[in-house]
Picture 1 (cartoon, rainbow, N blue to C red):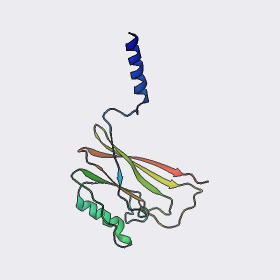
Picture 2 (picture 1 turned 180 degrees about the vertical axis):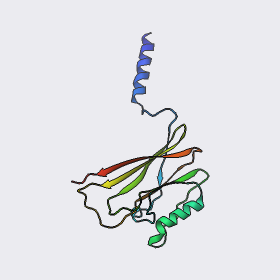
Picture 3 (picture 1 turned 135 degrees about the vertical axis):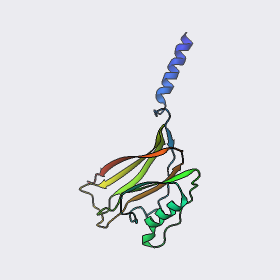
Picture 4 (picture 1 turned 30 degrees about the horizontal axis):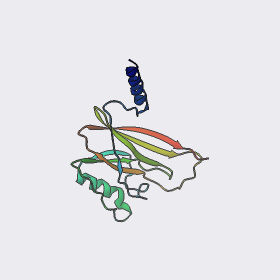
Length: 159
């Protein structure tokens, strides 16, 4: 009996130390494809959340996003048999200081939930006066489920 109580206490302690995640949720690794220094000035002036599942559509969006300022950066390799591309575009903003990123993706029982975080400059932030079009492009594993976007926004505090 004493041994059973010890085993139960050990099991309870171990369970309390593990990460809590709903049953059936799988976290997908997110690989960023946005070229360094190309995430603020893009050709995507309208807000967009896209899931791209074929190479032709990816090339079209890539060239539209990066082709307006000289030659487009090289198109990253994506294995569309096993991966999809996710695009999060904030749309044209009146100044610098804005950003957007695909923060993560999880597979639930009903869909792939893609988390997108947008950031705006606070009232005291010093920003450029240039028009910007913040963008993030990532690839994730193909899961065979539909997609849903979950949005969060915050204002950066500058003191």
